[in-house]
Image 1: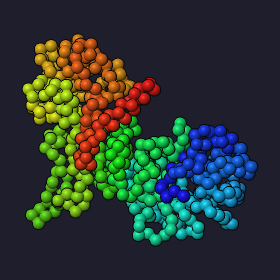
Image 2: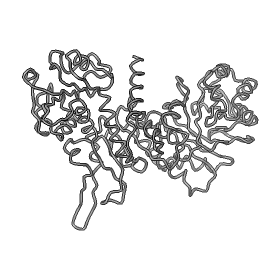
Image 3: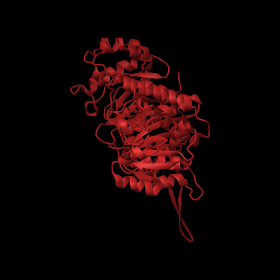
Length: 528
């Protein structure tokens, strides 16, 4: 019998007949590392005979439940006695797990050789404090014959999952003598980390959905995503955890890129997306106990710098240490955080840096050979433009800034030592390269461009930081003008490579990272 954490794939079928005709689920039957959850309340053809047919196929590695109507069950008229009778039949047939809600009386129930999961579900909210989890958990854990205690709740935001982090820390630890496991699942996008890291916290399994299936709870990833992207079966409490914070975050290719790199080098690391809404300070303060490094994307790159300041009271007064390098301070934004203990604090803290700036400079140097004394026009005046400006100026380039709002261009130029220009100036500028840092041309607005074709100088270099789509309208027009072009994917990979090496101290497998991102982008475009 396997000791690795398992992936329990939830059935979504409305009948046992449909389940037994599903090639995907038949392929998962009794496969090592997998369970199949049989949701008996879903099946409209449920009888003792039809259940026996399902168990003939799935019994050894089946998790069977007949959900209570008050906890998401689909049979509102089913009595406790009726539900328990079917669950007893499953236990008699030797299934792996029986899942029964804590509210359901179990008088006379014999779990046989199955492990008993005692569960609690709330599809509307999540506990706001760790103590609320313990009030739910403790009465459940002290009931007889319980092997696993499961809580599934619905957080409104990522901050509502913080109590789950500490609830896990209380329940699944080496010093706890109780012979049971705890599984805490936060549903929805905010709770993805609780599903991926179930094994990290000592839970025996997590839940997933089938390919193309809706799942039985919000936020369930597919079993292939858990297995192939996150390497769920291998995760232990010894692994290092990384992630990306942003809002929105579901589209991010960073988890695919970094997890492929970790797997290539066989590092015990996993990387997850975290949808962080509002000010990220509370999230970063609480999750510093879990995360070893963080990528930062829109809209947090500027506000995240507040998380890189340590304050410590000394006899002479308050010492403040800003743990960012000079370039990051000049840019005023960070896209990379690394956890450290620091010399001025006994608590974990964050050091911030910006890998966008050197990645952009790398891209331009690859096309120009050198940036020394080259004239680079940056289109845009936001955070990305600032990073590019600082990155290329550090390598000796002259920078002009063009933005539809002249005042913003002048502000950026003044703060970075560049020159603000207007669209009317374009014909007179002798440019070596143009860099678009605006979102113009990005999916879904693929027919837009920051420049008209006749505004692009012949024979220069044009670099678009937009990477979805791969070939933007700006790049297509530049090619027609005889320009060399650089796609945004190169900067995306470049900043990721630098993040990876900063975190791990190892040379990043750039080719692998490039390949998986390129394949994913091509698949997305093919679906359009």
